[in-house]
Length: 88
Ligand SMILES: [Zn+2]
Image (cartoon, rainbow, N blue to C red; front, side):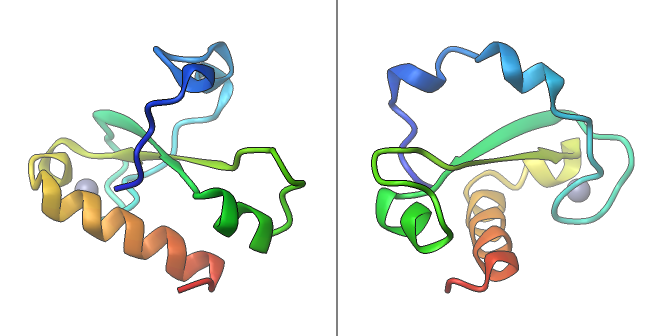
């Protein structure tokens, strides 16, 4: 998972609550427990159209069962987001 030690996105930015709840990114369950943020590298962000110096963050939700997969879930989330952007 991409490092998200960035002052701009911690602890929890106000806009995060304005993003509508989604189904679980990994299994599609409607009842989600955890909201995550996937910060794209600057190189990747530029490849999908972000202006230089701007961040791109993907907000996603996970159900409790998928979240409990820990690192496995993190890797699947990363793979899924990158696959959907067709930038693998
Ligand atoms: Zn799930």
